Length: 232
Image (cartoon, rainbow, N blue to C red; front, top):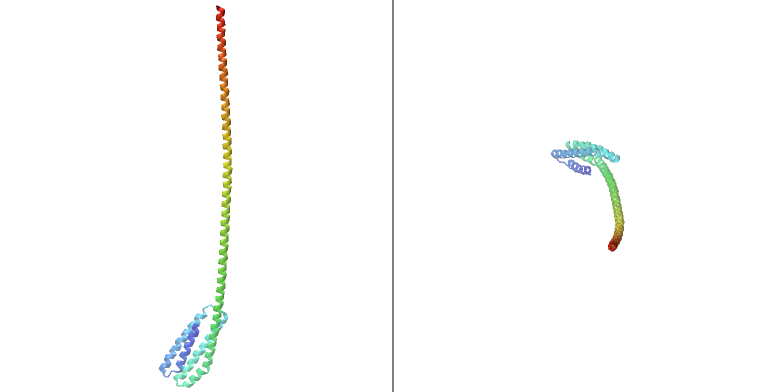
């Protein structure tokens, strides 16, 4: 597109060059044309160093060739203008010059069309790459969310199971403690009953012994009384 703009400016310079009515104006417009030609060549060199497809590169090579022919044609026009042969100069610009301009314009339009096709192709490829990347990111995000939910579910399930197991264990331990407490209570009761029975037996034994002692004392007293009576 920049190359086409430079070429259109060059056509205006060419027109002014042909219509120059003095050597001074002729030289001024010639210098402007030379300056614009330099800019065109620099643009061509820059484009040649760029990554271009084969068709665009071929079109650029053809444009470079036609531009060189145009420069040579303008040298002929200048020669006729400086010698006062303005009519011959006009005939060159309206004959071979016109055909050359039409050919260059057509070539530039082809180059622009090819460049636009490349841009559209690159844009389409970029859009497809963007859509693919977006879909991949969305898929990865969805998978990550599912994995996170699964891990959270497993963690909750595992925690619930551990809590349930701990509760069951506590319940069993409480039951065991209650059973042990009951057994201890029963054992204490049995021990208490046994102690009471033993105390009662001991008391009965003591009473029997006391009664036996009383009987012995009584017999002794009776024996003593008998002995006293016998001695009298």
